[in-house]
Length: 278
Ligand code: C2E
Ligand code: CA
Ligand code: CA
Ligand code: CA
Image (cartoon, rainbow, N blue to C red; front, top):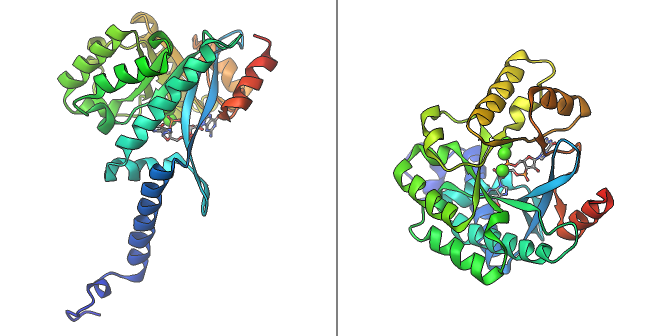
């Protein structure tokens, strides 16, 4: 296999080859899934200090006939590197807005805000603002109930373009939440320039908040920062009542996590809200 053979595949070791072909088949599958619309959005409740639902985060699911349910953690990175995130991201936004429009006329759901994850590549599209505008108009949902979740990595490149687009979208009524806050490596100086509404404490700081003083200190810092900048703060990945109590003691008043509910298909989400008696 060392000599230059006709079959160039011989240069890869078998393990490497397996990785490459698994990736290729995942990409082919993803491409087909987009054509055949094998995706679903699930909705995870977001609750306030009183435990009342105030919103939801839309999380995409791939229902592959062969693989079953594929986690977005597995296919979002591939969707990003292959560019498939563009059609997928459009589908997510359209589906989320259509859902918001339906909730608008349903008792107990009309005031809910819906957070949608946006990829850097998607946000970077020249016509992203127009796409959102068109989607809002077509769906008939209220822009005030739509939140886009941004990540710090999106801010690392072309901050001027990102800021301009955020301001234009804010002008339409949308809000922004900074996802996984504290896990990126950008400076804090950009924070004051962005039209943010919310900071989201990453699951990584919530997990060990009771045992790791550093995690507690970071969570505390995020809450204080949000307070002083007039932003709301939400903690993700809240799994236990003790974690919730620790966050509440730090002044964090919004939570999301398995303690309340896993992400649910729309009908189950609606049933969950109804059962909370809102
Ligand atoms: P994320 O935005 O940080 O989403 C939170 C993840 O944590 C979700 O995983 C959610 O199901 C999970 N989670 C929620 N509560 C708990 C909890 O109490 N404990 C634990 N252990 N996990 C919890 P999911 O749905 O697998 O999504 C993974 C990531 O995929 C998301 O992380 C997000 O970065 C990305 N993603 C999901 N949907 C979309 C989408 O529509 N567009 C884009 N661009 N990315 C998406
Ligand atoms: Ca998110
Ligand atoms: Ca997150
Ligand atoms: Ca996270």
